[in-house]
Amino acid sequence: MSLLVENVSFSYGKRSVLHNVSFGVEKGEFLSVLGPNGVGKSTLFRCILGALAQYSGAIFVDGQEIRSLSHRERARRIAYIPQTHRPTFGYTVLDTALMGTTRQLSPFQQPKRAQIDAAHEALSRVGVAHLAERNFSHLSGGEQQLVLIARAIAQQSDILIMDEPTSALDYGNQLRVLQQVRGLSREGYTVLLSTHNPQHALTFADRVLALQDGAVAAHGKAEEVLTPALMSGLYRIDVTFADTPGGSVIVPLMGGEG
Image 1 (cartoon, one colour):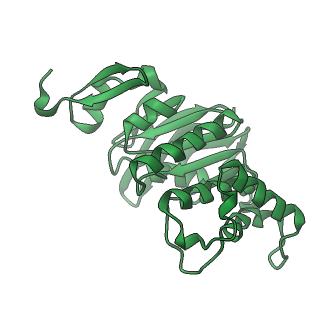
Image 2 (spheres, one colour):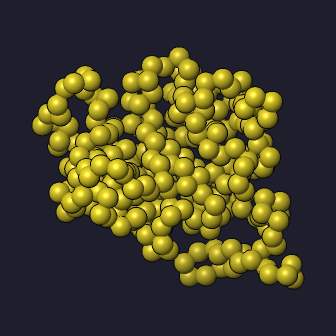
């Protein structure tokens, strides 16, 4: 088991956000986390990353509780990929990927050939090696997201956590990024990715964790968990599922007509 979450609850002051959340993710699995705004997806990720340590329950990575690990040790096991952003400084794509290797260095140590090679290899793995000398801030949103994934790969962590990585991307770039993410899971990476688009979960993920009001509404194989009843409960909209040559498609029923 790569990651095990057991009965995790968390509150911001008196406001309870997570309620007895439990699930596990195996090595090489792609887990999509679904739910409307405000159900605790980002809070759950921050607990797993160790940024919020005051939760009740337990979170284990390969049998070790997250809170028992040092910051460097957590970084060795878990990498975080944020949403696309526009940085203040004009780092190159290679420099951005190299940032993923910092846990391997002392605070004032310069990257060595091993770190530079790891950054180049990570960029190649996601298909953006040709952008290595470009200014990161001048890239398209999709290219930036792929570079951030490369940075996480260069970190050499086994678990990748992505908080709505495609939310600012156009349709084509969303699909290209998710194809790369699914490819990484097939290589053995454990992926947790939150999304507002249940179709992404159905098309790309192995399993789904659906959160509602801070609790687990459903957890299991994507094709089994994603049902019209779950969609109605989460998003208050009626849907049906249509079979197409490219797989099952979620179709909203506008006006609630069946």
